[in-house]
Length: 57
Image 1 (tube, rainbow, N blue to C red):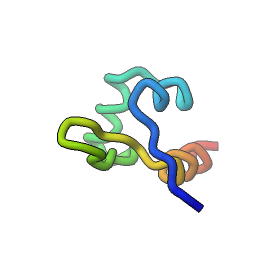
Image 2 (cartoon, one colour; image 1 turned 135 degrees about the vertical axis):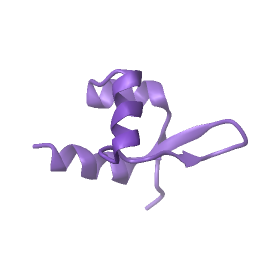
Image 3 (spheres, rainbow, N blue to C red; image 1 turned 90 degrees about the vertical axis):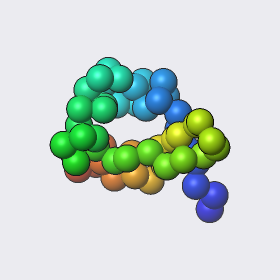
Image 4 (cartoon, rainbow, N blue to C red; image 1 turned 45 degrees about the vertical axis):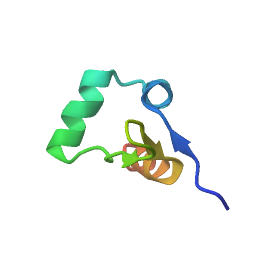
């Protein structure tokens, strides 16, 4: 199966978190870090976000 990557606006929609909350949680180590897709673009893997959401239930 091919891994899908989500950009930040999609992550905000999937999690219901704001941009600043996502980055604050990442800084604390409580949210997955993105991977570099291109020189400027980053994205979060679908599996990392799914695992994070499952751990929050």
